[in-house]
Amino acid sequence: MKRKFCKLRKVWLLVGLFLLGPTAFAFAEEPTSASNQVAINTVWTLIAAFLVFSMQAGFAMVETGFARAKNAANILMKNLLDFSIGSIAFWLIGFGVMFGADTLGLFGRSGFFLGTGDPSTGDGLWQFAYWMFQVVFAATAATIVSGAMAERTRFPAYLFYSFFISAFIYPVVGHWIWGGGWLASKGMVDFAGSTVVHSVGGWAGLAGATLLGPRLGKYNKDGSSNAIPGHNIPLAGLGVFILWFGWFGFNPGSTTSGTNLSIATIAVTTNLAAAAGAITAMFTIWAQYGKPDTSMTLNGALAGLVAITAPCASVSPLSAIIIGAVAGVLVVLSVQLIDRVLRVDDPVGAISVHGVCGAWGTLSVGLFAQAAYGESSGVGPVNGLFFGGGLSQLFAQLTGVVSVFIWTFATATLVFYAAKKIVGLRASDEEQLRGLDIGEHGMEAYAGFQIFTTE
Image (cartoon, rainbow, N blue to C red):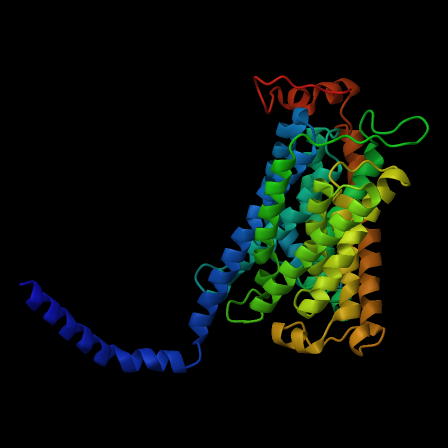
């Protein structure tokens, strides 16, 4: 019986290959049909969106690890709620402001409530996928700020801010660059959001941290700064690895096309820049203090990732290494400058990683872009200064960096000032001493453990 069954199986297999073989080869030879291409693009874009969503966990772990144990639950709540509130705000208003019909190159005026998403048509269904991809980007910009303002911001004020950055501040910048606005018309290139996402988060964090003031015990009367170590560096390290992984959705996913094979190049440039950033940050801090500091090295990897986000689709692998390496050095120097000279207390280095290195990455397009890479990815035939493109592209990039800084810093300052007047911005000294977990949420992240503080 077994032999007969095996023979029959072979016969049917041969019949199947005979009947289906020509069809299968025809599918392999023919170009992808329009309907299949839409399906592939939709699946790819959603997978990329889910990868970017995982970055929320990465940010939560990095910020929690770099903060003290008594504020861990508070940071987790802020990361959870800025995505929750931001999702509703982006559905209500933000997506329409970002991608709606253009008004004077400044903002969109249609597509609110995801009105362009029609479940009865292929194009309408694509809008749902595209919205999903864009909302996780908006959430990334929002959540960066929680790190810069960690350990002394009142929870209601953070909820207040989360709505406005997702509904208004971030979408306006997105419209300028990605929605057909005035910076797009000037030729600015920011493929995956070094400026649109990361610098917006970094500059909003700078505005909030400046208005908020430093944590208790951060600065002495003579102006010197005291280090306030995070409570869990392994947790921060895990967060960085999650973010690095999620970035493979962030950058390659920005093609929104699974049939665009430049996603492979973009993944390579993304990875190389992150690696270079970690290495140069480590050697920079090692040269300064004689020890390869773990926390600064972790931030170096993130600095490289942030910097390559704008040029990832228009530069070579070698250029990506240079861009990431510069970012690794830059983040160390920037953290020290902001802490010691500007005296702005940023517990996780978010302003330096996302604001400063986001600006550097955006400018690097004007230096390192090569038409061969840009044409294959859809960016266009853009050449930077080092590849015969002259100063025009660099000037377009600089215009975007400066204008986004002015817009974001000004509007975020207004939002945080309004929050200060309406609900209160800074936690009381008593709450800071006891920890925001107890003061704001009535609980401890590590119940049953003895928490020692130096304050």
